[in-house]
Length: 84
Ligand code: FES
Image (tube, rainbow, N blue to C red; front, top):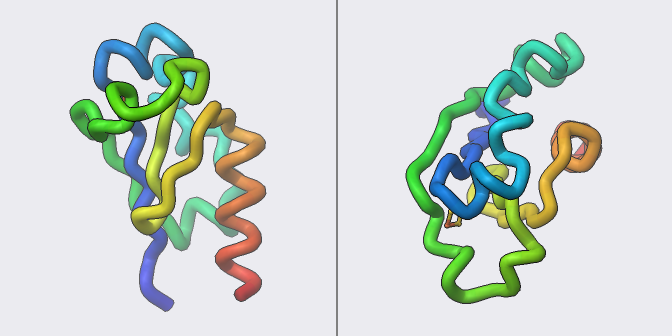
């Protein structure tokens, strides 16, 4: 199975609105998800200028935007992708 690509936005807006809490997400990630994921930090994904800032922090999972990202929200979506 191809690994899921998780990009954590570390641009200023996202960082200030919670992405700082996501930088160590691999440490919290359940092992069955971690083994199927590649996590990387990203410069501004270009979403904060087009959308309501309340949507930050943003991440992309296989190119799909997840707003107001929390570990729980990200893990839930990763689990769903694994089950597809
Ligand atoms: S800082 Fe995250 S989308 Fe711009």
